[in-house]
Image (tube, rainbow, N blue to C red):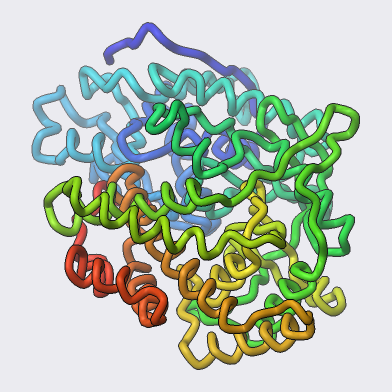
Length: 520
């Protein structure tokens, strides 16, 4: 096996087979397609037992059948983290036997677990080695995990995460991976003696390249770089009487946090997921309550200064809309956006963005939709809506979070239901003497079009750049929402631009885009 000079190691012992699950949970966040895992150890050391624990964790199925691939050489599995290839190369005589197994393709496209990796010859420099050594006790094992190349820093972070969890008093908590979001954050459920908490692993967002006026995309779009914003917004929401999760422990510098567990119920249910009308109504009422509050532009930071909630300004709205030009358009048409297309697109959006700059901004959570709204049935009134994922909160127009909810990117909100819920909000908001219904409906169409334009770009980017092809299945829904928004008379010129330059955005399907990899 090739050795990359950049590496880090983590050695620990386990004394019983049940602890294999904890060991698997400790390293699971490192795994992704293209990063092979070499399982090293003598016969009987426990390589297959560890692979079984890891596969059950990744699949979310504690009863998953995971036979040893000693005789078949290869077993394949579809999991929530993508396709996994489990190899046992013991019976191979050398690397030449691997070609007919599609070994190299598997290394590139799947999470590869490889027993007896020495039979493969050279493995990529970016990988994880797990050496298992039997102890004097027949149940005891020493694990040495080594991250090579790009995995070295990630392994060190996972070691620090385990230390954080232990120091917070949850060392013996059973760790279960949860489905993540479209960001780099990862989440786990900790279960210990009947108590539950959420562990958030949120590495600091890298700066990224400077793209405009000395700023990165994150700077312009007003994206938070760490957990400070989450902590302060959570506190601010709770102080105003809304259900944000209690924070049990945090390490702002490392990006680790233990949070209150809101349970598994959200505002949708069923298979496929569908909105629960009563819960959506309460979510709308919660927004109406939020939007009559005068929200501060600065928040105290426990004696460490203040945090300025950024404004959702024209530059932020435009840079987000441009994602459709940068990712969706090239993938849909096979060509980059021309200078003329980009200039006319930005001219149209500049005028529209100016129409939604409000003199009475509110806190906009930005992702106020079904994955981030928990249903807390034991609470009362609008407290039944538990809110998460609000670290990118900004000061902006109240319509943005409403359109996020009623044009949910991941579940279909029918036109009739959208109209009923919108009317419910308008009835509540209309009690203010300064409320202008036509202006609000115009802003709803503009910001709906902006958000759906942005999401079309983001979901193609997730598929093409990040190998999260599962997001492509949502494109038809988002296209229908966008078409609804563009039907407003104020967006006639923008609608003409889409029909002329990018009609694919109004009729997008998943099979328009060739996904990269298999993760979702």
